[in-house]
View 1 (cartoon, helix red, strand yellow):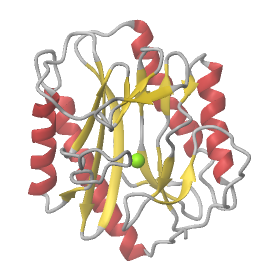
View 2 (tube, rainbow, N blue to C red):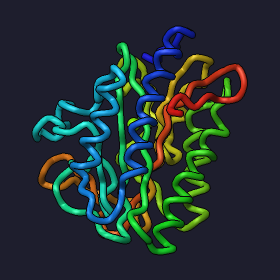
View 3 (cartoon, protein in one colour):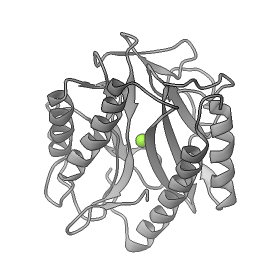
View 4 (tube, helix red, strand yellow):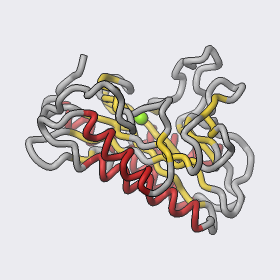
Length: 253
Ligand code: MG
C-alpha cells in the first residue's frame, strides 16, 4: 500500500530529514585521512540522539540471516556499494566513502546518502560522485503529479549510462514514512513495470547507486556489505522527497 502524507506528517518528516542532514554536516566536517568509519558513526549517532530522534538503521534485521545491523550509519568505502558496517580501519587519502543515514523523529523517517571524498581523490572518482549526484536531480525532475515511477527510473538510468557508468540493479529506492521502506519500489533503471502514478503527499527515497564498471554486485560474508563484483568504485546519492502540486520538495535539507 502506498501512503499519502498529511501536512502534519510532512512536517514531522521535514524534521526527521533535517536531523539526518545535521548528521551529514558533522560527517562532512570531520571526514579526513586517518579518521575511522566508527568515528563517523559515533558523531552521527550523537547528532541524531541529541535532536530527539532515533537512528533508523540500528538493529534492522538482516535480510540474509546475519546479525542485526549494529550501527547508526552505513559506511561503504570505495568498491563497497551500500550497507557497509562501520569499523576501526583508518580512511586513506584518495578513498571515497558512501555514508547513508536514517533517523526517525516522532515516528517518521528521513533517509539520505552522500559519497564523500577523503583527501584528494582521482578525477575518475570525482566524476563518478558528480554523475551520481546529478542523476538524482535528473530523477527529481520527474517527480510531478501524474508522472510514473518509471519516469524517475528512466531519467536516472539514461543520465548515468550516457556518462559510461552503470546503475545497480539489485537494490532500489523506496517509499518512506512511518516505515523506513514503504511501497513503491523506485528502481534506478527501467523495468517492465511502469509503477504507480505520483500523487501529492507521496514521500519517496530516491537513491541512485552508481558503479564505475559493471552493475553487478555481491554480498560479503558478513551478510550485509554489498560490493561491486569487479572491484571497481561505487557511489550513492539519496534524498527523501515529497510529491507536491508543483515542484517536488526535498525533505532531507
Ligand atoms: Mg534509502
